[in-house]
Length: 428
Image (tube, rainbow, N blue to C red; front, side, top):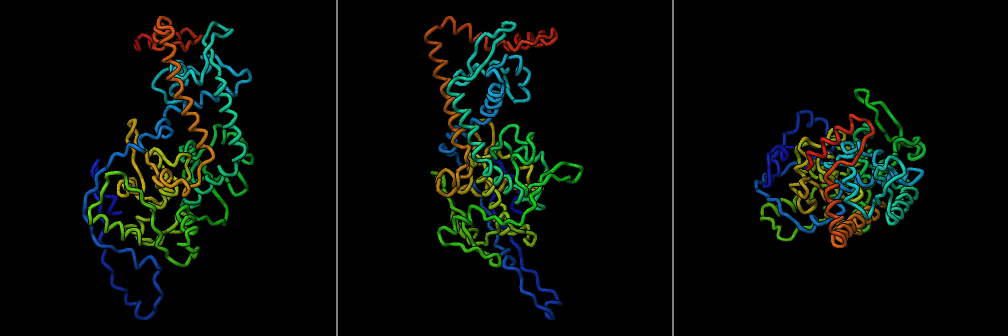
């Protein structure tokens, strides 16, 4: 798209590409066939304005979204303990997983940061630190497992919708695995036999380059969230032969005002025909406003499938090729700040669907969202516990604070012990 070919930083260039109508070919005089509905609306007038990014404290304060970098490794370590028959593990079982878990610190230090989740004690072997789950963490783990068991069909449906949005109704496994966390798929989901988690409409296939992929073989037709909500209001009737101008719900951030020419362009954009993410779009002119509206619709539908209706923006880049998105599709987030919010908190660009937090009845909640929020609340309790320890026993706490900076992830191998010792010295 031409509108995606402009470079931006925190000031975004906004315009609708100008296209002139091409005169009909000579053959048109002899044989007439009605043009598709979209062809009459794929041209628009040029609008050249600037849109600035506006910080919104409301979305930047959603802890369940911005704690993802800490919650993911915490849940992985929690699963290691919960799956152990004894319900506890020595630190040596996980001490070398810091890179795998993408932790900037040692695993032992990370676990000690959350005493509300992990309880440390001296184990029976080699006087190593051992860890088990607290009572609250055990209860929350049971609740999480119950959600996975009871909502297996819902998780499978969300996965199916993601695949059905692709051009060939198939996606490489490596692309799907990048989105496991956001779809809410549990650890070990793909290690189980296919029939355990997937119904008969899923099929493993070989894709280009010998990649393993997952396809959906089904004639089932899906309606997007936008279409379903419009049907409830009586503003949409499911007629595949008509181009329906559905409008996106808009939620302006406080203090974000649009200039008149932007507002006029947005009004025109809202009146354009809506192309569902599940429909064929091969007839669309990629430089048209209708094609842009389809891109916005795809992003809107994707975020509605995810656990917290948010995603790290770069994770969507893996989908561009398979969902027919333009090279610079990320600019669609910047051009439509009333629909999406880009949070730059924690040095991460996170795309958030505003509708999910401003009109909770519009988006069907993910069954796992409530559990993840509870985990974040449990993590927060650690701050109070650590503070209380410091107040009750400052001498012991000073020693504990020193140990946090040392690497106690002991390795019985002598070479490993040397490496750990050097790491501990560097941290000091």
